[in-house]
Image (cartoon, one colour):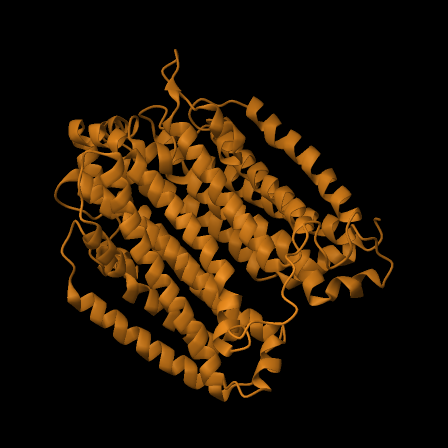
Length: 540
């Protein structure tokens, strides 16, 4: 079993020699970069007390950032970084394992690897070694950097934070090792991992929201939080009231799940999944035999997965509005905090508009992933076969971009309408469903800019198209949620395109940003299409 582990490990490191370092450096550097900014902005006792009063009973805060233990800088760092950077670590590990296991099998590379002196489990061992090393680097970077850059955080707290984040990441690598044994395709494995990450994040949020304050004055989450890896990491209270024993939970989980992954691997065929694939028809339907039908078939699973995730967030927010309203009506500091996120006016409409903007970020993530089908179809060789038919390059590109654009518009309207419906059904507040649906649709030009940017990069630099657009998406998401709290310079905030959109429907929609975005989307798209027509197909 151990023959070939080192060569395969080196192969994985070589294939991800750019992508993996970018993940690691981005996670560590951006988190450490925030520490002096947070210290300068909210480091004084008065600001920390204000934030503590605002967050300690804030329903939205409990759902999205976790609990605030005390009015200290360590507690502030925890709610601002732990869960959101945890999401990045989770996705890094999930995509790493899927790429070098299930994707290898789908490409036929695994059969070539097994033709040498290697065991079936060697590839899985190699990718888990790489995942362990990547998470170890994150743990060391965070542990050493946090104490070095911020004297307010103790040595114990710094290293417990880093170790917790590293173990948390390896937990997701172990989960992905099991998931890839269940599904036959890379798309299904990645989609299911994304659903798991979102579901466990939401479960932790609901557990925090329904928790109770203990005798020590600290919030004790409900049992639901402890079913989530996010809840395990949060239970460490690493830089507030350090607890080492919760580390035993992810360690025990990994020791059980990784052997399970190897057992499942030995009980399936190469290229197959343990879960039976749905049997298709003997003949394709008339729709599937058309370019439009094939495009929808390739895009529908990504669309359905992100639609369910975004609606789950929106419905959760809508259901919790009655509990949130009391906090907003009685806490002045909470009013100021919500207004700093981009809204003005009455608290509940402002908060709902901010939540709609956050759901828009999820729709943006859908757009970037869905546009990635352009590159995956090309690199897999499927596009070459399609273009050998009557299907032209222009029609193929237009079909995919139009499908993503229309699905994105539907998601925006659905999120806005679902939020209004939940608020009307679950609270004493009454909001106009049409207004919220149109407010969601007002972000559509933003989606078109990302679609145009991907087409441009796909035409000019196809190998790194996804990387470039994902990096900018990460920046937009970062600025949308944390930018207002960091009091960054105006020019820095303006580098996020979402900064120029009104937080609707609480604020009036301005036409100029929409027009500029539409113009930019058209220009990007035309330039990208022209470059796409002039270049050759590029494989792996």
